[in-house]
Image 1: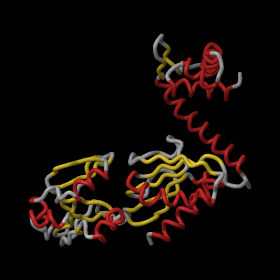
Image 2 (image 1 turned 30 degrees about the horizontal axis):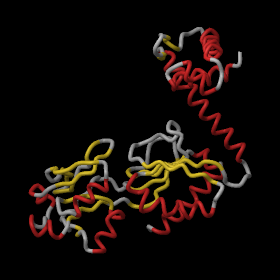
Image 3 (image 1 turned 180 degrees about the vertical axis):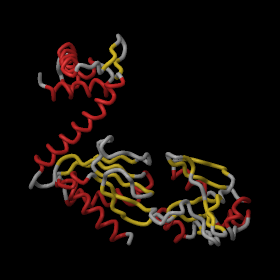
Image 4 (image 1 turned 45 degrees about the vertical axis):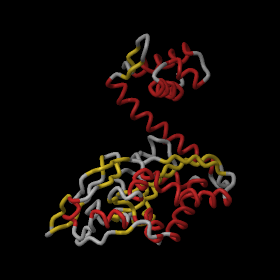
Length: 302
């Protein structure tokens, strides 16, 4: 029995939910694929899948086996990719995942420059604020805001990610200008929703961090929509300084001077990070992208 092929078949059945779908992926008869998986189960002396006429489900031991062998298959593919790419020019598909609000103003202009320098690299860019594991989501490079992750990846801090409170002059003329964090209770808050919920506004008062969030009038994971509402004078918003700079410089928005300061975190490690798996850096296309993005972003936003 070709165990490696059987394992690939087994994993694809799990991922597609049926023998028919898995067989179509490999362009083999479903009966042949099913026999291979059954042979794998016999060789292991364990039932990995619960079969029914409609759906295929993992058994308890099947789930454990899938998690382990799937990691092995991914590592094998990484190793194969590294060997195939060794000492070659950067080429092939490069998968990048980045925060939505970071993509348009900062990442996309840099990728245009990158594509001119490396025309043989095909860019596959996904904008999402969801936290993602590089191994699970098949992403070569991820750019995320927050803290350096605990997962086993390389994390390079690209820039600070300081959040500031802003509003229009018209809003402040109508509702008054808050001078302290506790004044925010009398205002209207526009909140960005993260995968963990709306961002809280906090401030260190008398040596303790306190929630000073204004009453919510809108919550969304769509930064453009929230920005439109704050520009329309509908409330106060906290957002990254780099995102708001052009609106502050033009006078469309006014940064609030609160004492003590208001933040969304008490940590000093909050920033924008570029993440990649250590082994992937050996692949020319990944190395080229990492080196280029780190250098250019740090140069532009030092």
